[in-house]
Length: 233
Image 1 (cartoon, rainbow, N blue to C red):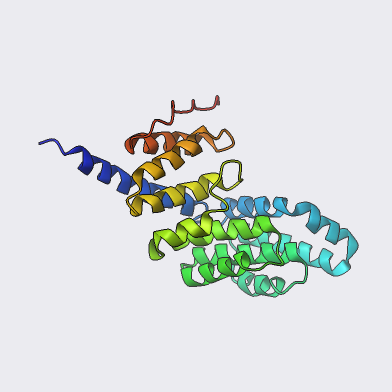
Image 2 (cartoon, rainbow, N blue to C red; image 1 turned 180 degrees about the vertical axis):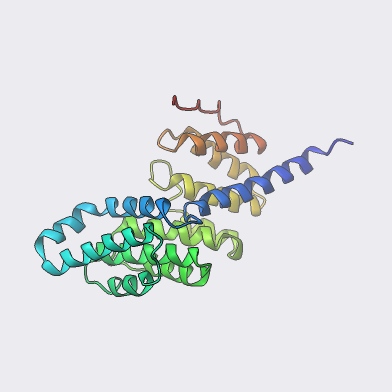
């Protein structure tokens, strides 16, 4: 017997919810090595100019940056025993870029070690630290929300991510997806569908996320246009 459309939609949306959260948490990685190195390089790049300016201005900063780079190398080689202690020391640095990078790395290691409580508290610390550069704080807020998506109320997710869930924001894809899923939890499927459609139409969003948004918007009764073509290899 064929399932009623509503049942099919609910099943699909549950699968989408699981896939979205899996995709978001996949960024944290489940193995040491290349992912951690690559991810941390991205964070360093976001504030790289500031860090390297400090590197040339203050000897202490130079040593801290070198220590941070050595920690990344050690993590990539699987040498993680001393990393938490060394990162905790760098997290006390007065250099904002060094401090933020050390905290992000510490949170990533905590996830690797299944210490989600420590990871969550670290992301909260970064997100709530007004002295840190905004890109770091926004990235931490996204990761904090992804980790506790199932344990906070939908209206809290929506309120928390509102500044980031807007077209043109660098975090529109991640923040928009979580906001839309929170709207679905509230029963606001049309509103969620329109948000997914906006994600699908934003060409600054990765093609994979846009394609997923088109499909989800369609399942919610909102036409988001054609699925973006896959990029040429």
